[in-house]
Image (cartoon, rainbow, N blue to C red):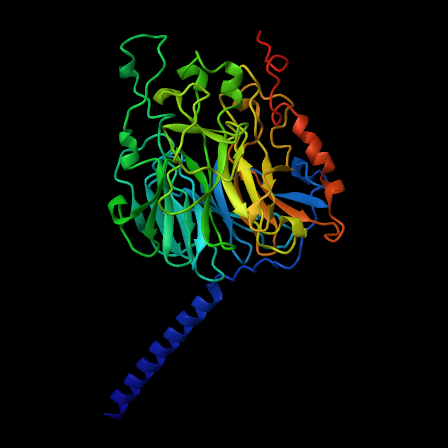
Length: 482
């Protein structure tokens, strides 16, 4: 019996020893935690500011040169960057970036996203209440972020599903009201709900619009959902506002607890009604719209458009308009912005790094026009709208230029970069993405904030004379054709 007990004891000791060895091996092979960025250390700007032109006192560096065609981006409070990629096949439609040596340049790039990519208008990327929210064209997802870990764990949760087929302008942009509400855009695929069958075969007739526009039942508006409820569809939400053609830039302003957006105005005034609109008017009208949106607002699409020269909402030609008739009983924007510039993101600045005049104002990324011929294409900048006493001053400024890379943009493809997404970093730096190659910039203020004023902005104001920023002269600025 004593011998048998001794053998059992030896076996037990051996097994314990093996378990301890296994545990020791696991500890030896454990991945060392990646050091996080020091968000209080501001890196040096690139000597050429990454090719950008900025107000005096500002500098920029290229965080990443080409992550792939990028849409919106967001920066976490530890400096990690998440980017929505514009891809429509496969999985892993998101990109995560991390800087581990505090030089401002990303040195870890990791694709992730266990969900099907369903269209090239996949847009959104936001961090809210510890979750990373992002969207394809048809689905809004979220994943829980774990402190110190770059990639969210687990399979994405489905928050909202669009059950209708993919269509043009299918971006699902998001905003949160900090009270459990999530706002989602359902943009319209047409210019003015036009119906070519109403022209009776007359090629010279004014294009007619469907009335009432059936698209407004499920499109052309913003719906409000529960930010934490899974597997919602449009019928689970509430239509918050309507008459909005296409919104990609959507933001909640904490200063007045209100929803703001930048709306893409319609195209083809001349094409649909050449009797009333010239090709020049087609290039300069109608406005893109910077708007504050209240529940129940109707901004008049497709029956109207906004003329930022007259500061009036006008009746669309498809519904009896002629460039003179005004439209009544619809909401107006806070201000009109240049036509066809494609405002694709908007950010209210909350940080302390930039000079005082930028606090509480709005940055807008203009993706740039595609259809202003025979005049040059325009936009392709990041602009800033100052606020005073809680309202926009009515003027916009060139904040970042240099994306286009050419003096005259004949067609959209001539532009080297197209500004797309905006995000504020934990130290108040402004991050910007572009959609062609996926270049990411970080803009920082290096000057004296107490002396920053009009003199530092003068050379940016002068840039408004460039062909892709100024209002074209009706005759002098026509593009020459070979």
